[in-house]
Image 1: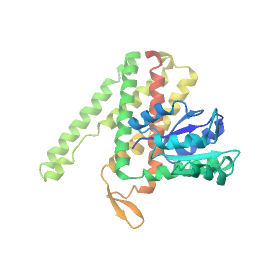
Image 2: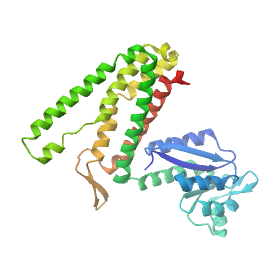
Image 3: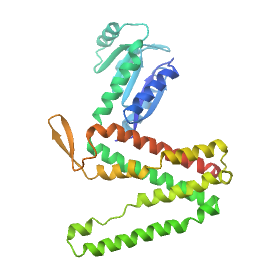
Length: 313
């Protein structure tokens, strides 16, 4: 599972307001919106090849009246190139029944139709439908691991830059040493105690390195926020860094803990759909909220890395 939901929008006169409405709907479903627009069918073969490699698009929005061609004439080609991707065919000048007739005459399967007045609403419904189809434990578990891995990497790059830039950051290394050595001492003690028990007690003594990384990242970004000129930050950038530190302060609970919980629950069939066993804290209905929080923290760490590495070139 990816954290982003891809939309290919074939439209030559879309409005920024509609684009923002679609992005909000994607975010409400717990994903990051990735919207690519093209004015007509030019270049669609290249996009199809890219989609085959990386599964780029979960939804295709196709306007009826395009630059130099009509959407119903392009629709068969779109369906051929994207055989399993949902398509929404819409128009501001034709009624829904006319659009359905046009699509039927071309024998294009799996295409939804709507008027321009219902476009945002109908596209939002299809976005929700796509999101629900992704609500499976295996996907969420993999997503959690991928998000934490990316956030780890973002923090590492930012930390190395901050230490190279400011002696105060480099001087914080003893705090990291203390975290690691304290953990090792505690882990050693826990393991020694487990030796008086059984195999299960032994294998439950394990490290969570991402936690240590997060704690040290917060120490260094605190230094950067206190000495912004060293990192090429203006006042607005420094304020933004402080804001991002505040918004991501509970990464350990909101992301790392959720990752760990997702890794230790079991998905079973229930009368009303999939249910999770092994944790009273997470249900399938929480997946959208969890994805949304994952996305918010990933975006925050991306921006924080950008801010503290401005002088790296």
